[in-house]
Image (cartoon, rainbow, N blue to C red):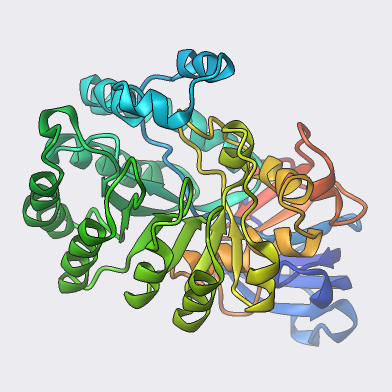
Length: 406
């Protein structure tokens, strides 16, 4: 359904925060883009005769951005969840051959069509909550053919669903079983074969590494970053999730788009992120599901004014969720973030974490018309409710793609 014309009788959060709210706002949508946005009283006369869409006094935000997901995978790991409830740690399970490697086995065995169908269901749940841009990582293939399969599915999702998909190559996610005890040789394969081939095929928008005791060392991580730099690809990092390996500082030296997880981040790491302009992506779903007790250094991130984004981390092992709205509530209740911080975290800061701040996260003239109309009385409800979706409708590219037109 077309959303072209004048949207009025709306409360607007153009930048995803309460400070810039317009309580009687209007948006003019023409040819799929925002032609004008502002206070209804200031609407230019030339738009007065456009088709009208009455928002009914509802709140409108930018389309939400999920900047860290692993949506494309096969299988599930519910039995590992049961083991953790009996006392096993995430690291224990990984060292026994479970964890990421178990999902690798299932993903390698799945056909591309099977992966697409399974991933579609997860993506549809995100779209129903107002997500209009999403990052999807590989990292459950760990060989060229399977990594290619994951990234091809991610591209295909972006072609068939009303969402902007950004792909991240995470070949350095875990050590595949055929390389047991030969991590440096596997990194050779990542940088010399997989990354170069997949980048040449146009399947890679960014490059990520899991820098951790059960992942890859800072030295191995830097080899991947150096290879990405040669290909002019931006980098990201899974860092300081289980220990402080100095991954965030390393990523900052390479001007990483984001450093993600960060429970064990120290002040030196925070300062490095600030200097580099790297976004801190917090993942409260994984924090909750793994029953982590070490909180990320929120006060330090605030003091150094590091942009903070939130994401689902949707994956079968540590964050089996497809609800970005739930992450807002968890970020407030578990991480002690404010409502304003969480709203920025899934709009403009999340877009910045993807290197796409010029495309997503803010409503302004000239941008694609991507926004969400919410059945709420106050924006705080987006973080307040959990297990409820107050999305009335989603507009993407000037068309209503989800929900009911007001």
